[in-house]
Structure formats: structure tokens, C-alpha cells
Length: 533
Image (cartoon, rainbow, N blue to C red; front, top):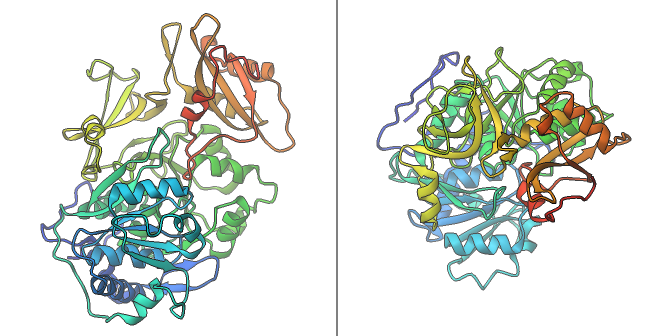
């Protein structure tokens, strides 16, 4: 059933989905009038895939899966670079009732072994450049029986996506699924420890597309979009696949890592109207001496997620390129953004207001609701909450508390209903009996002209009292002293919040999706925390 609406200006707060429903069929069947229009463009090769070709190839891949013996609810690990074959495989799996599991392409052989064993995936679709990480595992995984190469022509001897698509019939395949059936998995990025298999339903894809994609972002058929966040990431999956397919927009895909030079090349060449980034990338783009002028780009709006956007970065980007960054927060568990700034109503330094269709609450350690201005844990109730963590009952019960999902993030809300990030629940510091948000200290450090990035953790001093310590990456060619940075923070925040120690580093540990892994910084510390003071 096609759930799209002609009036793209409408701002939905509720999406009714029929019981019998296949998400891939819905997204593919919307485009009869634009079959020849480019759905995906490969920025590396310049190749395009039209909406008509996408639909035909996805159904061919679904037929090929069935011919290979994949039945309903069987699982396939997808470790692919961002090329037009990615949506063909992902949607083809869902059409066939097979469950695709999107895998982070930057992980190690050990990580992939965990995912294959944990998921009991029977199939693996892997891009040729990534095959080396899987080769030590082939023949040793008890459930894996089919390996398919992506990014190779169908003339190759091995089974490939291209061969499966070219050799399968074009008959449309629509598995007999319902809105509450399991559609796909995403493994969490591991910013707080081991990845967890997060299980999502058919209804979740269109809920996020309607409520955030159209309802907040205002994506329309005439938009061209580019997401630096990759398709395997929940943020990137909505940005580059679900949202544009829901309305008929065109997506530019970049298979390689999004370096500032490559990002600016995409923005110059294809002039996307919507750009999706993360805070660390925006900082690097603004620091690039070769960055283009505003007139060279065609941006209408930008978004940021993954971590809270420092206000200084947002203000500088708007001043430089004349468009706002809509900072928001989402999660693998909720599939996409549930709290966001709005076009024309951005307040940098905040994460905005709830996305229509989602309810938020802030609760204290005692479980009671916090008053405005009080810091507590953010919890979410909404239609895209994951079903569970696979093979992890205890974490499932802790995170999914009835209708409410615990974010693990600390927030405050002001009288106008804007939410301000206060750090991860396990990152919050209590200094002298008072909570200190590491993000607040990081944001202060980021306003110093020499600072590119900063991360703050708690370290015990010689009296075993917890105090803030900052790890700072300086901009190329810039210098700063620890004492100068401490004074800078003291001039902006309450005195007890300044970092007692500052360590200058060349880079910060991050996940593949750009989140700073503060737990790694904590794990390498000694109690006195004197390094770099």
C-alpha cells in the first residue's frame, strides 16, 4: 500500500499503517510516474540507478534469494560499501521476507565473526574490497552457507549481486509480511561497549520517513541529498535511503570515507540541497583551508546527529554557508531522530524540540519527572522503537522499559520546550557533589579559536575525588597552552567546571559513525590523572 501524500507541506504527527504491509514494496511502488528519474548516483563512478531500475533489480534480487533457498525470516549479513547495489540488496531482502543485517564496514574480522555467530546469518553479501576481513571466517561459520560478492561484474566466477540480478526473473516478489514483522537489524555502533543486534519492524522505516523526513526536514521530490553517514548506520539509512525513497528525491552515494576533500567534491559537483553530517565532520570542513565559497554549493538545509553539535560550529557553518544545521538526536534503538531543531527555529547549543509523533520525558535517579532546568535521563516513547536486542535479554529489559525507551543521555528542558544535552548518563561527573556535564565543558573548549575537537571525562585526583579532564585536538598550525584553555573555560562556566588536566592529542577515539568513545579515554587513565596537566 502506498502511504505517500501529494501535499509535501503537510507535517504528519501520526502514520496509520495497514496490518498487511511490506516496507520495501511500499517504498518501491511509489514511483510509477518517475521511473526514469535517478534514484541513486554513485559519486565515485558517476553511474546512476533510476527508480524503475531500482524496483526491477530489487525484485530480481528477491527472486534470486528464493532460488538460493532463503526462506522467510532467514538472515543475511550485509557488509557493503555505499553504492547503488546497497539499496538493491537491502530492499530485495525485505521483499523476499529475508532479514538483512546492516554491518559496519570498518570493523575487524573478530567483530564480523561475532556478528555472524550471534545472528546465525545464513548469507553474507560483501563488497569485494571488504572480502579480506571475512576470508579467515569462511568455512568456519556453522550457519553461513552462501557468500555473495558486491561491486563485481556478473562475469566473475563467484556468485555476485550483479549475476543474481541479471539471471533472475523480473516477476514481482512481495513476501506475506505484516507491519509488526521483523524487517531488518542494525548492530549498534559500540560507543558504549560491545555492539548489540537491534531488531526493527517493517513499520519503522516509513514511520521515521513520515515523522522526521517529511515532518521536520521537509524533504521533497525535488531535493538531491547526500549523507556523510553511511547506509549501515541508522542515521544514514534514513537519510540516504528511506527518506528520499518516500518522496522520490535523488540520493548521491559515496563509497569511500567522507574526507573533507571528497565531501566538498560531492557538494560542488552534485549540489545537493540537503546534507547530513556529524559534528566532527562539520568541524573538519570548517577548518579546511580549501573549503568552497557559499556560491559554489546549493544547500538548503543541513542536519547533524551522532553527538550534540557544539553551538560554535553551528553558528560558524550558518555564517559561512547561509543555511542552518538542524541538530538532533536519534539512536539505533529508535532508528532515527526523535528530538530536533526545526528550520527557521534553530537554537544552537540545544537539540531542539520533540519530533511530532514522539513523546519525551526527563527523569531523575529516583524515577520521578524532572522540572524544567533539572538534569535527568531522557526517555522516549514513539512508533519506531526497536523490538529488542538479539540474544541480550537483560539489556533489552533495561533499555526498553515498557512503552518508554531509555536513551542513556542526560538532558535538561527549558521553559520554551527546548532540550539541552548534558552528556551520557555514564559520562556525567559529580564534582563537589554537583553534576557537571562533560559536553558543556567540551562546548566551552570548542569556542577557543585554536581548538578543533575536545572530549572530557572524569578522573580521580590524589584525594580520589572526581574532576574533569580534557583531551584536546588543536587545529592545524594553531597553538594553545593548558593554562590558557583552563582560563578560557573559567571565563565562560562556573569555576568548579573547568578541566583540572588537559592533554593534547592528535586524534580522539571514535566509532565509524563519528561518536567519541569516551569509555576508551576513561579506560586508559591512571587515578591521579596528571598526564598533560
